[in-house]
Amino acid sequence: MPVHLLHGEGFLVPKRLAEIIAEAGASDVLEANRHRLVGSQAKPGELLSMCNALPFMDDYRLVIVEGLLGTAESQGRGRRRGSSADSGVAGQWQALGEAIPQMPDSTVLVFTDGALSANNPLLRMLRPVAQVEELSAPSGEALSRWVKTTVEAKGASISPSANRSITDLVGNDLWTLDQELEKLALYCSGREIQEYDVAEMVSQVREANIFVAVDAMIDGRPGVALRLLHQLKEDGKEAPQIIGMVERQLRLLALARDAIDRGVPQGELKGRLGTSSDFVVRKTAEQARRHAMPEIVWRYNRLLETDLAIKRGRLGPDLALELLVGDSIAG
Image (cartoon, rainbow, N blue to C red; front, side):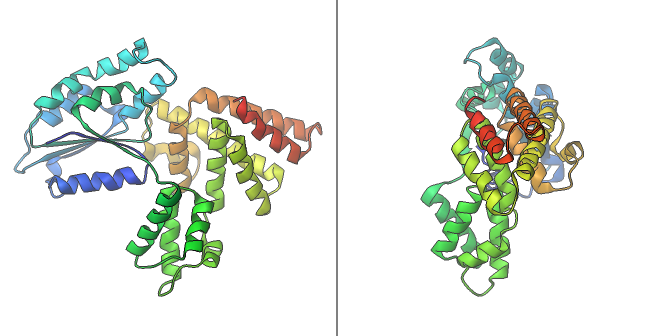
């Protein structure tokens, strides 16, 4: 049975995982033959023992490993291929790469992860012995087709203008899109979803914008960040409120990045972040995995300087906001 590695967009990976399990005929395996490991807590010997064991009174043993490759991501970030740090991470798991070809055909082993860099040492190690699928969120016309297909699967239809409106607002955050399309399909039951329905019903879109804006600031895309923050202003938010929203998200981002680096399970992140919102926890964790701690800290310190300049009257709020976003080039 081939080994699978699924990484990329957080909405698509679990869906593809379910398909692979069904295709392998492992959907109904006994509980004793199902194993799910958190990568940051997994040990090579433990994983190999599970994978080499024959299933108990069943055809298959299903082993799912979540986030293992992500544990090597922060260590490998920015380093050249073949560096000593990369060798250390890959060396710890070298026995796994060597053992995979000898595993029983009854073992269904699937690794799942978020976005990974090309120089991830575990990704390079697993490529020759696993079926690797990088699942990226669609964009442009492909995203419009995804929206249309998703709406139809919910038993509804959507007009082209409504399709454009919701993709303009949400972008390709598939989790948020799916949730909002579900609400729209129920709200417009029996008729086509129109643009005015999107304007009336989409609730998480503006909150989602702050995540995208912070991403853009850290990634050095000031044009995107400024456009999204101006959208928040058009929705009635004043510059000090927007700066406060950015500050809160950067603080949560630093807490989440620290928790991930320490191997804290995602189920404990609500307590760490001090929020009861599944949406905020999921989005912040996804965002934290994309950014190194030094990047987050630099941006947070820069924002505190901006806030102080406003309070001391050296800068007006609107100008301070634009200068802060412009600094994303330097960051």
